Image (cartoon, rainbow, N blue to C red; front, side, top):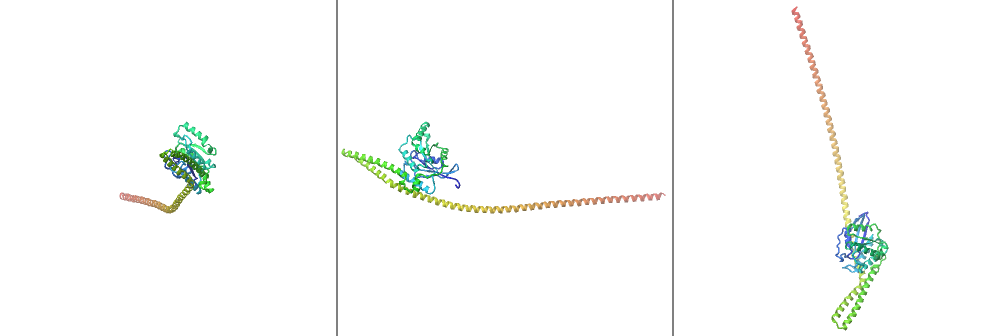
Length: 396
């Protein structure tokens, strides 16, 4: 979204520690969640961006280094490829969350190996952007959980907490996940150690600190297998001396199986580099497809914008025509009202003129009537006078 800061946060930790569940709660995604300690995150996957406190947030789900389906070599190659590829495209992480089950009774070898690899991926300088998040509190009694939390703070996680990392509880709700994320969304994005090694220093994945740590773990595993093989050989020699053919064959098969594991471990170093390159090529192809899709979407948006602009101009033209028509109708209405008013005035004047004429006629008729009446009275007086004169003459 233009003008809105974009934030990326990675979620790491052992398999079954609740990484994917946390991500689904926070982002509204529906990534598949494993059952129990079984891993279900087979590759690095990012959520669709979502808004949180004015930031556009993307969460990145990662598989653990104790994955039930993939080896540690595959996981390191996958995570290293993703982090380096996105870094090359300008993306940095504003924060990293390491999930830990408070329900775990003790910090076993798996947890220690996961956290050691986590530290080698991040480096020391980015620990201020790291949150250690404990979850699954509902599976332990409160006092027991608090005791384990105190032990973790004072022992296992103490070195990273002393260098700026923080430790928080997750209440397994959307509100709790958002509260945790708010500790990170205002951070200055930082470069992880493995990103600096792979991109800035041009090291191979094997030469990185995480690569050295994986090689150390693999060497330890190989040495343990070699010690077991040495003991199996001693046991097989004893079985040969005792002419225990069945035991000898069983030991022989076990030695062969261990040899295969040793050879596989010896080849993991070369396979790490091969898997890393393959993972980067796969990511590059995916990014290319996404960029082409974005270009197509951009072209579609341009076409849509042009259509909208044309539609806007057409609406403006129609609006202008409608305004002109309304103005013309308004003028016609005004003209019609003026004509009606003039007609009304003309009618009133005509009525006044006719009233005046009628009044004048009435006045003339009245005068004529008066005159006739006067003339009639004059005629009657003359007759009387004549009659009186005649009587006088007759009497005399």
